[in-house]
Image (cartoon, rainbow, N blue to C red):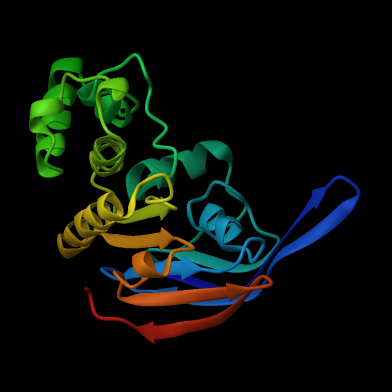
Length: 228
């Protein structure tokens, strides 16, 4: 599914050049559920951005589904993201004046699907995450956990092969965090590869494998964990 070899990434901030990723080697098989952990500045968000085709890299290789992801135009990167990758963020990133169903249907709009059809698909996807009765609610009418479920539905509506979740429980209490992680386990059990960036041990313990980053390098990527 995903293979990274000797990958390096640097960027400039002010007058300083930061070497964010250093000769990273990483393989994630289709159907895995993996967490990426590390201290602030360890490179985990940079790695997630590279995997999600939101950022380029300097050297090495990154293959997604057997295809080399290198020197992509923004248009080409957008096509791969649309067809293969779903994103979930800590801050939900929902449009406040749109209903849950309208938020979820947005990726289908960019695929050219007609409005009635995309709203029907969005409602079915919201039912999948337990929110069928909230389809017509706006984000302000939903709890934090419900908003994150809407965000997960939006990520799933295009049927991605891989779901990237960047601190998906960071804005939630512990009980709601567990509920969201159990939902991501269900998504994974349905065949979607799931990557979770987190700094929370309890969250990482609900994935099958932990990848630990330190100072831009993979420190450990073989720790297997049973679901709790």
